[in-house]
Image (cartoon, rainbow over all chains, first blue to last red; front, side):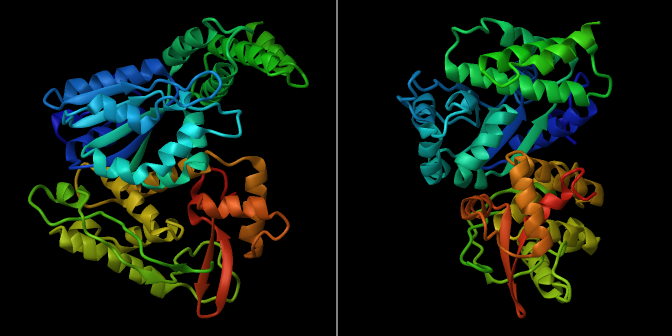
Length: 245
Length: 193
């Protein structure tokens, strides 16, 4: 194992294996490779990206955060268009793409941005001669698999990073910020999905943190309240209360 | 459409310099053309059907052929043939998935050979990925298909979605056509129970 692939000790054992795998893919790749990194926490994502940049200082890694469609769902700039504009005439050694999960509404039936991406998959392979790594939350991967299945099928590899207590805290803060009725529908759905996955991770943790669990349950209850579900999130509020007590 | 007949582009190995792992991991321009009706998805085969050894051996040969082209011997790549067979059994039936599994296994190897532990981890990882989009209704339908080895006649929309998303496959051998879930699903934690 080369030094670049030695995983950082601050990651959990599972995440270290995934880090080494991702680093190895970047190290060995020659030409196009499509990779997906499944990570629910921006803090963990930034940490992994920072470590990768530090391990490969000689590589030109282009990072791109996609601009989401308009509120009415109109796609002004497709994913491939945005990638092309970002790359321009340059020759990056790898492209990291963030924000694919903001390109569609998980609760909507149609997802034009993903439809266009699905159609452009062959062009993507020919146009970008380096690894293209999409960093996506779990719900994003789930939707991508069913809505852009041909695009998903050309992947070379997938990598999964599981958040820990600190990541969950940081994600909760991010989700709580401005989380009220005035938020647009797509973002409400996105935050609801993120909360669901953070809750799953928190519940399946080796030592679940009661405070994080309670806060996640509370926020998930609020999200369900916005979603006008039958019980209005009551079950989650009750579970959160039990944890607080 | 029963069976797996068609031409698949499955870039994987290439002949070039570098470490054996590098040589195996590079994506070449080579093209793999297959016309087959493999039935390597051993788990859940209909009772009375012969074990699909021929299909399994053919898949292992494809992998080993690519390994040799990369300048690595099959012994260096994976000395335990049962490990490679395990990978070939799990891939389901979409040849691209087999190469995704192999590439993922190599990403998780410090060096060759590819070990059983790495293969098991890779299969579990890919199985979890495949199951991410599944809702309870999908699982019910897939279990039904797996048990009956028949297509889902009562819900064509769901059946088409399962086929389109490579969650169910049609298989074919000398004794006819049957249907099953993607064999990778058997590796989803908790499903085997």
